[in-house]
Each structure stands twice: as C-alpha cells, then as structure tokens.
Length: 232
Image 1: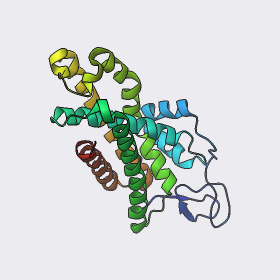
Image 2: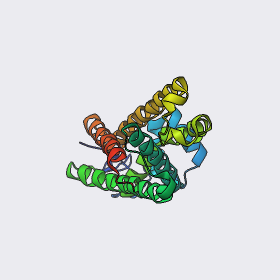
Image 3: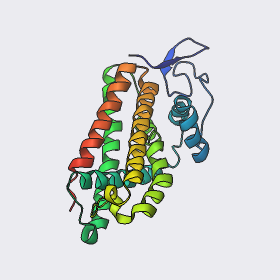
Image 4: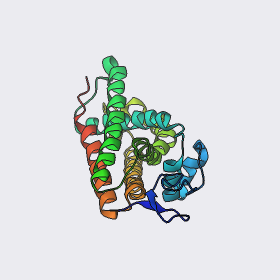
C-alpha cells in the first residue's frame, strides 16, 4: 500500500498530505489554509474525491465539529426510528434530552475512534496519515445525512409529528405511502454516505480493498450502535 507524492525537484517521496518536501523543502502542491463550508459541501456532492483531497490538504478543518454535531443528532434520530421499528420504543416524555445527548456523544466518539483506528491501521501498511485528516474526511463524507436532516426531516416531522420517531401509532399507519417513500429516501442517503466513505478511504490509502473494508466496517458499526445504544 502506498500513498505518496513525488517531489519534482529532488524526486524524493513524501507523505500525501505534505505541503513541502521533507528533503529539499520544495513546494509539493498548492497551499490550502481554510475550508469554505458551502463550496466544500457542494464539492463533496459534485466531485467528492477532489473535495476529500482539499479537506486533507487544508490546514484548518473549518466547521468539522459543527457538522459532526448535526450529523450525530440526525444519526440519533435515525436510531430512535430504528428502535421504534424494532418495538424498542424510547421514553421521549421523560428522557428525550438525555437520550439525545447519549446518542450525540456516542456517535462522535465512534468517529473519533474510527479516525484513530484508520491512522494506526494505515501506518502498519506504511501509509502515514494524520488523525485530524481522517476525522475530517469521515465527517464531511456524512453530507447525505446532513441533507436528510436539513431537507427531509422537517417534512417528515410536518407529516407525522413525533410519531415519525416514536411509533405510537406507527407512521406506516398514519400515511403509509409517504412513510415508505421517506424510509427509502433515508436508506438511499445511507447508501450514498457509504459510497462517500469508500471514496474518503481511497483518498487516504490509495487502496480499493482498504477503502471498501474501512467503509463497510464503519457502516456496520453505525448500524449496530443505532440498534444497541442503551437509551433510558
């Protein structure tokens, strides 16, 4: 496994994220200081591979934690939905705030750990990455879930109210056609996120096998957590 950039001046190999050659100090690429939120989000949609490269190159990973919080809120809502589907309802009247906090913290910790694991795993194969790069590309790869939160969720709540998350009665009984349509749209957003995870992993590793394995593992972990988070 190899992910390096060759210096045009002295021909030495450097880690992919390097700005200057470690041997001669020559400039290896254009400097990226900050990320513009909207242009970066749009680039993730339009040209994700280039977007992830720019995220890795950026000295300041702007808005990463802000997006992580929004992303984790939506994943927590998805978890409520999944648990309700499985007959494991949430006590939203007494513990909604605490359960929401549990979900947000859990999902953020998962992504922090995923960034660490990716860094250590790639290091064993001779590929050097930075923790902050791994975390940022994972978070920005969550754009589909962010879109779902901003666009789909308000409509879902307008149609079904709290019953979209807490089945009593089930949204499939209230407006079955709309409920199934939005369920499949949510599934498609998760599939899209999975594809972006693969592309993000490939940018960091240049290995299709690693990228696929990494993305699959992360999606399965997120799915398992959505089911097994011990809400109050």
